[in-house]
Length: 132
Image (cartoon, rainbow, N blue to C red; front, top):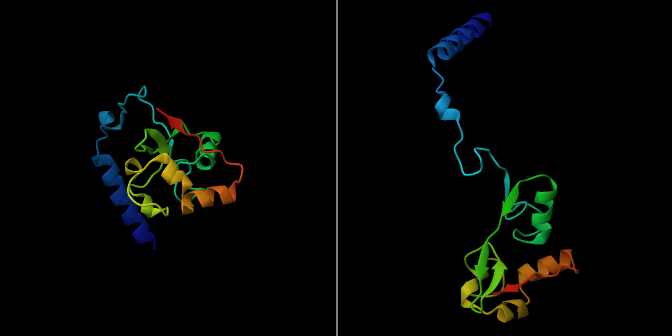
């Protein structure tokens, strides 16, 4: 056992002595003052209790200290902005097509799985719609 440990120590010593550290490779160059930021994905992410891009998913990520969160904003045919992650409504709702193929009234009037899930977990949830 001692021979293996000595061999491992010898190999690591050679590896560490032979490697030259390039300081430029470890410098950060970005538009954020060369700082690394921490962002959520649609809030707390897909594994959280609430669907991504909802206030219930976004508020906790900001509360725990993240610098921000990414949201997927799409526009309906009647110019209503809606936070929705998927490309097609049929992926997580009872509607068909894409967000920009539909009017907001058509999407809101459907008893979609997505809206039902949110209303079940928080019946007081208010959907914030911002028409252009």
